[in-house]
Image (cartoon, rainbow, N blue to C red; front, side, top):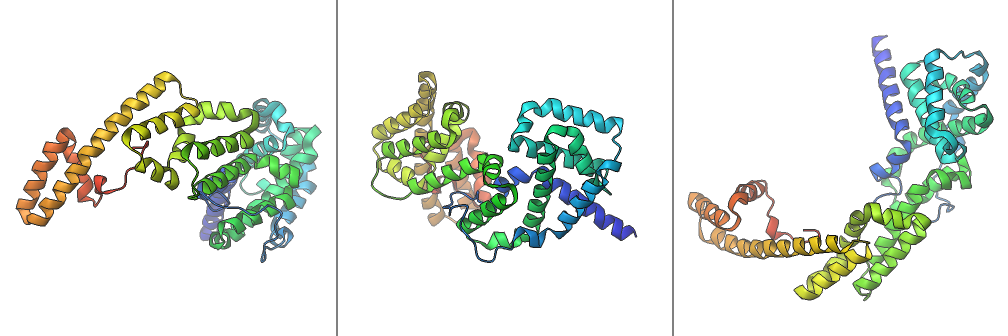
Length: 358
């Protein structure tokens, strides 16, 4: 009995954790269409070996049917009523949209699993009916679909890991549209769809095709406009540095920047930052940082060359002493950091530099 109770408790804990993060889970794990950067097939593409949702959701269907039958007999306590009122206040008009409904449903599930672990599924319909009698039918349908979706993900997680990313993405979008309807799936996972557009754009831009950096940046910014529409300016304002870094991290962009003379590279970096919405004061700070980084890397390359000569010439304690002197001479107060890095096997200045990033 103790072992059984423990197993049930572990199961409930895992389910609670997974349901709470169902929407961001796909992005966080990189298993479900968000590995960077991926290509992607259309969401309607048929994927061989995909089990129909109904074949993997018998338990969920049975339990939600039981919940519907039991809803009339469930009595909500004062704390339950307070929780539901808090949800109404929190979501307000957003609960009329499918994304807002799913977010509210997730919180209902989390509350029920915490407070009523033995029969949380059976209680869910009563809670959703009380949450919004007007939207009860949509909320209950969303709840049932969400459970089937979560059960399917759990049952197919290991298989999905082995699929090529485009096939995995297509299979997931097909499942979502089957369970929630095409329009609802697009609304619920709109953020993921935009993320996929951005990933596909970056993957396409990283192909060595002869385009100049300015042309690649034009395409990148056009994708942001297309994916985020009227919200693109606000996105760039809030996350401009992150978006810029993703662009700068492209191998093709780094290759072009590395090949440029210092003055041309400085102009190119300033142009990228300016196009990403940075004002003159920010541009001046970046210019100053670039100059400092250039000095550090010039000194680092010189250090690395001298280090290799010492390693080739000396052995044992004499080698260690010569390296210590060289590190103190080149890095001063940061010499100990360099020694620690090299002791762990990391040689900072033997690595390729990411221009504009370090």
